[in-house]
Length: 435
Image (cartoon, rainbow, N blue to C red; front, side, top):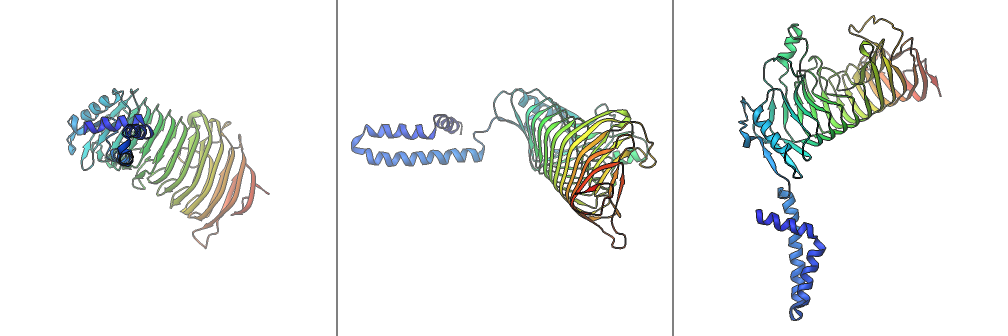
């Protein structure tokens, strides 16, 4: 196999055309056998192509692979395999060969304690997760806010058919009993560039499932994220202080936001998400404790919401500063979502009677276009904006939301919101100018 590898590598470097030409030149020097030799050259060249594609199929041309079981991981679901994972990661991270990968094989369950996989690495790294990774079924002292952490890596691909199980029930109970103030987030990507995360299933995180922060260029796709509807603060994906991020073709159902978008997020595209149960897709909360928020160019499209407590939501605290602008929610379908469209600038700890303050995050240039379906609450559209800093440039276009209960027609609530409507908008939004 090693000889085949070097032969194919030579052929690839030399190129198909050069390879074929060399054979023809050799044939031309043997005039009496030229026709037969030319025929053979075509046959050999075709074999060359077959070998190349076969080599790609079986991974002969891939870079070095570091299997965690080769570093002592048992994969029995009981033995702590953290050190074996770290050893495999360190070997891969210090390997300068292209195409380096870490393999978490299928058919095994690996128990991991809190762990950080850190760069910078000498080459891009592919982490293939086909097995199950399990968190300890116990609480632990939170000197680390994340369970699995990837940091300071440029060119990181994490993919596979595996499962990341946070076993969060023990933490949810601890929080409910007020014995724990908080819980770890399951899977974090921080301070990275050019990240791909695809194919994995995440379930029952103690708190947020997947978090991305301080990262430039991330593509999250084909993820499956699940936790009970009553599990606290178990957001599916949370993005903060990051830019050029895409989240697509995923199914998310948890006890909090399917996707939450924090301050410092720019150029985020979310599409083809099935959301529910959960709290919808939310920008915020922003401006807590007087903080400065900066969120811009957020685009959510082609998503479905199933019995969520909110649909498309922007939530900010009174007393905050900064802005959330250049936002669009397009082609969304609601299936008995409680508040399909909501801007709430009076978000607070107790949800009711939030104190009015003299400053607020400026919400502007927000478009809701092509939002349709049913609302579980008769108040289907809520635009509750600050007295000190009104919402401006709000556009509702082609909206048709009916009440899931025919006896209670859908309505809209408006406070300090300015903008326009376009096309059919049901229910009517009286504070916006029709055009």
